[in-house]
Image (tube, rainbow, N blue to C red; front, side, top):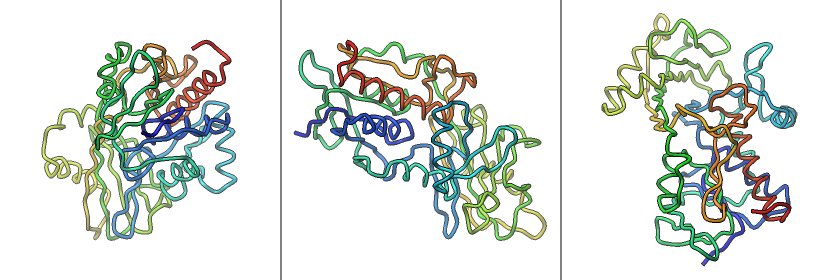
Length: 326
């Protein structure tokens, strides 16, 4: 049976940063378990024929010193660019947001296409992670970065009342391929003067990540929640009407796809970068919903996920090094 010092569940930004933080602290006996075929979570990019579309996070902003230091490194490496915004830049990945996640995850011990079914905390000995295929992995510490509702399912046998008030709004994203240039204004982002229920419209060709004209239409949480039980074709048909407003004369749609994000944005946040659970507090739950106390933005975003993962990694490193009582 496999045994690790630290098991990280979820290969999104928080899981990646937790793993990198542990590795930077000399803790290498770790494993990241990700149920999908790629790391990144909501740093998600879909290939559509010859084009690409970011259908999760489109960009990120910087408020913290930690992220600013890394952003300078990523800019120098050519991984990201300033997309728009002055004096508060919106940064984006030059090859799609998922490409940034993959760059950050290089050299991390990640198991993809691996789904966790439960986490057990016995009275003595290591923690136990059970996989869908029946296999088990033992760990001294576990960091859970899955969205809170999913985390609670995994932690059903561990007291976690601190998290039960957290709810999420969904988000529907329509992705459309045009046969000619769209009329979305440069640099390819629009979040004003849009129809009710529309959060933003993005042209990925003008954004610089797609060779073809691909346009994403993001719907608000309230709009998406009302229509959550409808069929995909019905939802996509409504979103397509918005996309068609940006076609321009003589332009046509050649492809339409839908992405459902069930847990897009928390309706309530936790004013702590992580929560410790279990008999000996050896299970840490973190993610974009867990905000540092001095977080001025007060909402879930790229930076909150980034900082939460770092804080969780630092806390586990601290425990393993024995510098504080666990």
